[in-house]
Image (cartoon, rainbow, N blue to C red):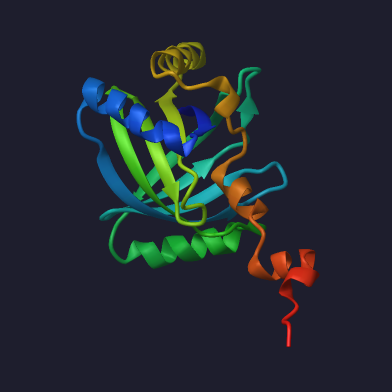
Length: 194
């Protein structure tokens, strides 16, 4: 199974218009609160994630990403539901196999199901509260058909290709400066006047 997706940094002023279009076409969104613990498990950027979403938990493995010329990301993906006491074992497995830990990701996700294996989501990351993201996602084995679906919905929903974001959320979170990095970058702004 492949995850085929395209991500956008949605200008905040465009959000109400996009949500209106989505509600008119697909009804109310399903809202989820998600938290990921994850990291890379190899130099080839294989990825292991433990995701808690509402009442469910999944162990997710993803292979390296291939990027099409128009920014569509394609990668193999495998999901295993985790129940009850298996959560702690799965968390330890992620920690044990991770060679490069990544920041935890917390987000609120609004999901519109648009087809059997396709959805449009608006993500609000806790770490970037003023920057919504949109993802068009298709799960399947037919890459060409999935990419055509994404291109079709991109045009139908008025998503500007200039808003495209090719980085994963993990990469975006790594790039956010910590408060100590901001202090070091601007020492004059942090001097107290007596």
